[in-house]
Length: 416
Image (cartoon, rainbow, N blue to C red; front, side, top):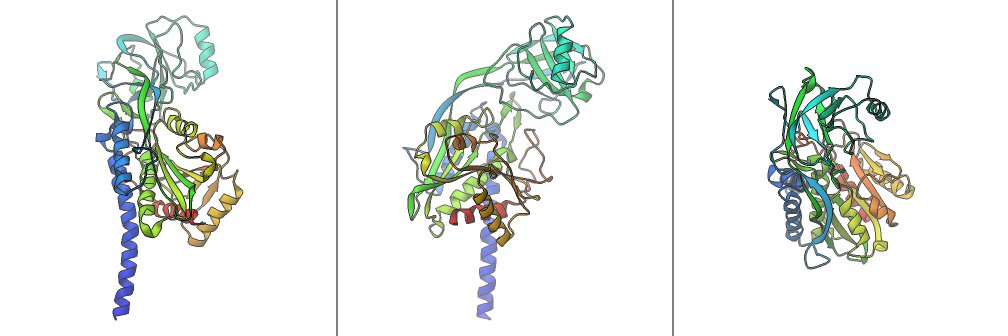
């Protein structure tokens, strides 16, 4: 009877331990995506608040730093909109983040403009350019078109006030064009908001451009027991889009509070004496990803330890789903690594699948890879979590579907 009770205790203790790992990650995710962190962007110094939280977690788990503290300070240019935003048509104020988003390249605006609706067949860059070249407009006109206009968006266009791009899809924002500003107004808006085809629009907001916005990467490490000069590196960007105006914020739960939370949980795990790795393990939480991989690029150009001593770098970005497994970017370049990951997964059945993908510069692994570091980027797959760069990417009912399996796969990877 005593042995049976002991067996049950061990099983329950093991289960509780795993549950606590996920619970810790959820607590970090809730904190990072909360309103008090302002979307971890560059209004109200949301990025700094997130960085201090991450550094506090590193300190709590007794991780070491490469310098006097965990911060690697640097700067980059970024535009922001800290004040009130107002877009009004037919005496109705549209809701920012729901009805529309504004381009991060916009300068301050305060005026009323005439709306010019383009024909429905104008739905791409070349047709738009042709139409624009054949018609005369005034500086007080804003063109309204149902198209994406990837080549034009955010750029200056002479002779008009701006462009409104209509879409039937949910509004999503990005700040990757926020390193410059111009006087052409760019807005993405819901098609239904303009169904009545109002003739005029009132727009008011003020931008604040920083040529050298001060921010920071947050870096810590745990010394290896056998190969202290060799490094296994985990990276994740902790920044997100921040605030568009003084009320609308983008929580960024999946992108990328999820990856940052898993990074912190891995730091917690490996900080326990019984889990010490033979290799030194480095944890790099970078900022500036959404605006152009600034943090990872800065670290790769200014490393705190020799990059050639990195055995493997794993970047975690958007790992909140997983019902359909994971994708490993750059894994096609490293067939031995892919085989090792699949062997581990087949043995333990951690994930539904590990999908191979080729080289891509779509996240923070890229600047390291370009320096010759063996680097991959992992994201989860699954229809249970589709929010991307929207105000609805929240921590509420966050799935973390394959969290346990991915976490264990990563731990096993450091042991092989």
